[in-house]
Length: 63
Image (cartoon, rainbow, N blue to C red; front, side):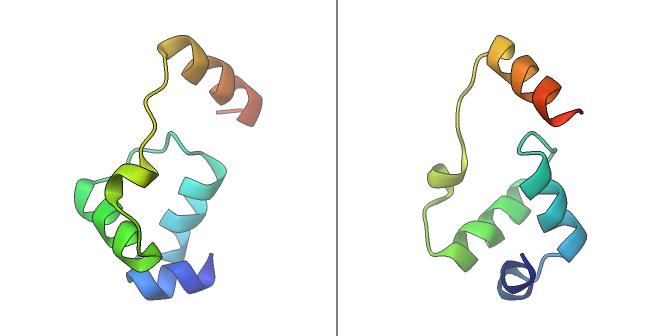
């Protein structure tokens, strides 16, 4: 996480929050910086999930 934070110039706390909760709200410019740092298209970082699946996953991570 530290390397990604440094490469993307995004705070470690934001990277950590996204790692622990993939449903954490993220700005589009932050998403773009992560994609650039990972050398992947932004679309690789986005997944379309149903509201029911989102609810189940959030319950599992305790958010």
